[in-house]
Image: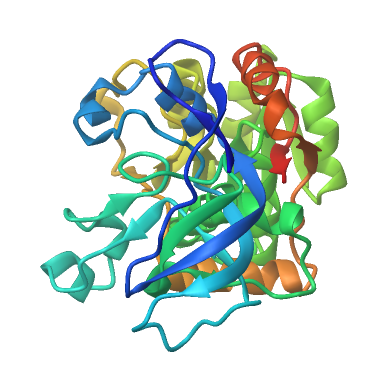
Amino acid sequence: MRAAVIHEFKQPLTLQNVDVPVPQADEVLVQVEACGVCHSDLSIADGDWPQLKRLFKIPLIPGHEVVGRVVKAGSSVIDLAAGDRVGIAWVHSSCGACDLCQEGLENLCPKQTITGVSVDGGYAEFIRAKASHAIKVPEVLTPEQAAPLFCAGVTSYRAVKLTGIQPGQRLAVFGIGGVGHLAVQIAKSFGAHVIAVDTTEGKLKLARDLGADQTLHASSEGIGKTFHSMGGVHAAVVTSSAKAAYAQAFYAVRPAGTLMVVGLPAEDLAFPAILMREIKIRSVATGTRQDMREVLKLAADSKIRCLVKTCSLSQINEVFDKMRMGQITGRIAIKM
């Protein structure tokens, strides 16, 4: 089968033929229809996360926003069959037995395997997946529409949900990219008054088109006064990986509000303790299978849509180059 493979960090992915994986008893073999290109894939290929390098399988096929059809099920699989359309997310498997799994926090399982990190991912014609973690995808969604929901969608959904935002409350989304443009729509589905913040007019227009109630240019001199005049926001979801976005979001949050860490700057974050004002700072680590099902339902009910363009597997290095230069709006999905 054709696949794009990481052999060495900071080098172009190699397009090559590799063996089709053989599913074990509790796994399914999936013919990939589409695989979203996440910024995390680029970070992995560039070796930007030294803390996770011990988990990396090298050579590695990246990709963790995978949608395709089951072509073969292992001998112990009973809930999936050939022909089922399924999606495969970041969490390839979790143990189900540890305290975190028992508490409904399988996304934090210390024994989890990670799609496109510790096991081969979806930049290939076929992928094997644990049947327990392959989620059925509604047929009303096309593969390229559904694929980005398996990371960008579920992460933004869980981020908004964990803020505890209530209808009518103010929520600011900092960074209207692949994750942020979905966060805007998801926050609206929660009934929030949504304020979108970005550095480019094109992305602010996109946010308005997707239902944002207000848009603010991040470089505007009066942005701090604007947030102050409204009493701050009840929650800020920062999807940007720019450290400056976090500094701005911190002062935008009202006392006792929530700052949600989604984007991952290369530098550590720091906040002035004397100005914390009982702000809650939380992070999100992708999502659970239940979160994923809820996101898919939102999409199937036409309450959210991913702005997605497609590319071929052979174009992946070009896509990575554009991603490095910040030239991608919305999401790119590899269409097989």
